[in-house]
Length: 96
Image (cartoon, rainbow, N blue to C red; front, side, top):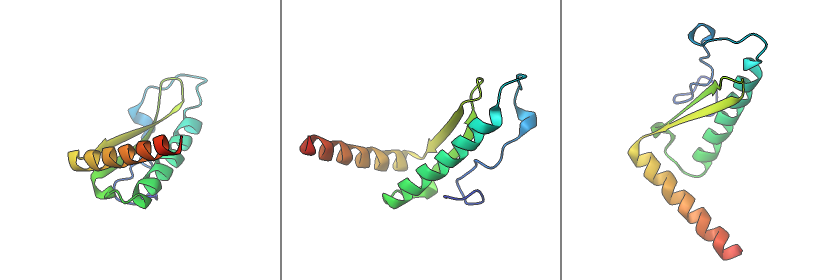
């Protein structure tokens, strides 16, 4: 899930004909940044023990050219991630 051709990672499927282009806006830089961020997030989720089969990451851009990472989760995976987030929050409260 951490590479362009892996299952669940759709960041490399940029279709330039599927978007409205505004002259002078650098969409490619934002998309590249989002692609790298999606791969980084996929790696982190995998390292945290999340079943990445229930995760879809897609790189995109906003109208101003800034990168966006879209995350889709199965309900089971969403609950798993919520549990991990709560555990991390509890650790931060203890440390603080």
